[in-house]
Amino acid sequence: MNLSVIKIGGNIINNPAALHEALDYFASLVEPAILVHGGGRKASQVITEMGREPVMIDGRRITDEATLEIVTMVYAGLLNKNVVAQLQHRGTNAIGLSGADANAILAEKRPVKDIDYGFAGDVKAVNAPLLDGLLRLGLRPVMCPITHNHKGQLLNTNADTIANETATAMAAHGYEVSLQYCFEFPGVMRDIKDSDSAIPSLTPGSYADFKADGTIVGGMIPKLDNAFAAVGAGVKEVVIGDLAALRAGKGTRCTRA
Ligand SMILES: Nc1ncnc2c1ncn2[C@@H]1O[C@H](COP(=O)(O)OP(=O)(O)O)[C@@H](O)[C@H]1O
Ligand SMILES: CC(=O)N[C@@H](CCC(=O)OP(=O)(O)O)C(=O)O
Image 1: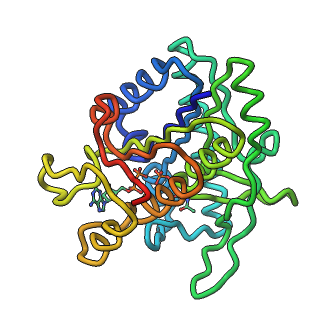
Image 2: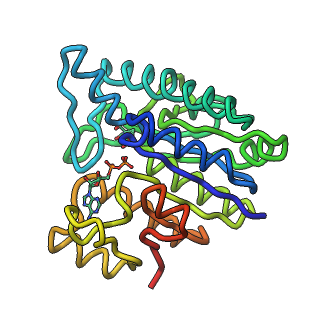
Image 3: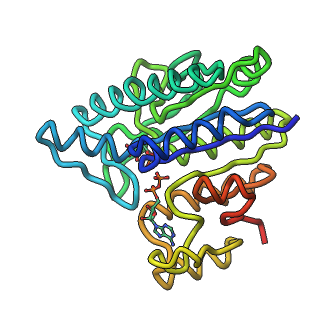
């Protein structure tokens, strides 16, 4: 059976018009679908409003105890419930999940090596039978980037990783999975200022070249690391682009070779 896993990033979530368009698209899909959302931009705003400094390294947040409280409120509360309500309004029977709900995503605190990421979670297992069961009930899971370690500790996990791990686990469970990363550019760009410069396809080799020459930087690095991990682990198709590109079957396609 086919399955679409759609990830929407923090810049989409923060722009009401873009969010509504993305949710219209998700609601219009006829085959089974799972939505994964981020919200890093909103979290950084709230962290700043609370008098703290957001700290990111290579697109990943350093999550101390106070930051974990804020991101839990923002991702698992405000954003997740708002997205679910907006989907219900569109006639889509969405169910919001953090990783702790029904043990949807088990993670472990990232071990401290050179950098201490604090309460950042590395995914250990996605509960594919649970997601499969929800899909069979006609529900559409909406997953936020909060996970847990089964010992009572919530953890903050990059939303691009949640999307990759979910897509990969569902592929291993027997679905033909299309993973679509929806963000604010028409694809991975050769030149971010030139909207016609989307790269049609990338392989691990061309990705390494674009990273080395500085074409691909920042938050695009974890996104592409996750995209290629998914492609290498049985996900049928991984595409990155804005909503117009994804709707038109365009965007950047990540392939094995
Ligand atoms: N070559 C590139 N093409 C497009 N975006 C790029 C590129 N290199 C770096 N980026 C940056 O990556 C960001 C996307 O990563 P991120 O902010 O983590 O996405 P999301 O909003 O999906 O979470 C873009 O907003 C852009 O600033
Ligand atoms: C550990 C870690 O980096 N967590 C991310 C989770 C949110 C996220 O990934 O949101 P976007 O998709 O909007 O970037 C963070 O707190 O920013």
